[in-house]
Length: 406
Ligand code: ASP
Ligand code: MG
Image (cartoon, rainbow, N blue to C red; front, side, top):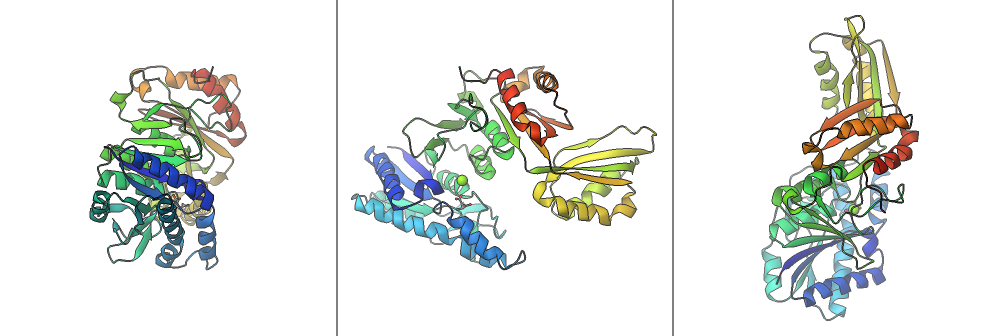
């Protein structure tokens, strides 16, 4: 007997017929002799609608009440799925995030899970009952309702799998696994059988929207075996696992892209100690996350150009903060550009192979694509390019690293 957490996303529970389909898949897992807890999202589109209603009260509405509103989508689907299971003769009950409870911190609208009390679910397992749990929902220390941020149901599922010491956490979604790159722009993208936690973490945070980044962090920290698979087909999905489980490790496992960053260039910043701190301090204070940074060699030895990226949604705030500090920072010009894309090559294999970055640069050069900023880590190389070359760059790199399907 195994213990399994299954998670179904919004498109898998989009209407009653699909919820019945989910119930059949849950029951099949129980019939194989397993203990099952199911985590569900709200019906597709529901959370967007709820968020939209809240936003009609302006950007400064009470985040506690926002969570009260947006957490409701998942309460509908847990009740309906429990009914659908009962219709099949399968014992089941729903638990809201505050009944279990799922304890979180008090960062309303983007709370982090602290602990999950699984006693009720474990009791239910003894009675042969399936536990139906809402994704996204939590309870703050002061007992107010929280939510885990958009896409947070993935994190709920992994956190529950960790708390239940489940053998596996199956994430059922509308794609049938993790691909070497986005199949919508590269027809020859391949589905990966396995991917390491570290690579998945990079893929998720660099733009592949299969799993919420935080869910991968959590899976890695608690060594939860995650499988990404489709709820509409029966083919095996992608397993997210430890590096030593992968026998033949490719040098590069995937290419990710993100178009949600913007580039800022400050011209002629005085080149003296403390200037980076003076620029990035106020941005951090304004909750703007700076990602890639380059500082150009100064020609005259007195000034330097500083280029960096920020999330596009924060660009206006970043520019306002910098303009306000213009006199004290002493730069001569500020340029902002939203038409950029970050392209990343990811693979744990590059730790032990030289020349991976060089082939990226050569490939882009051959296509006449200019690289504006470069950053690297042990297992990834990212470059910033003009947004219009995104598809061209991703396709060329996919071929260059031998990732194309035969
Ligand atoms: N329903 C929430 C959302 O749409 C949580 C989730 O589905 O992951 O963001
Ligand atoms: Mg999702």
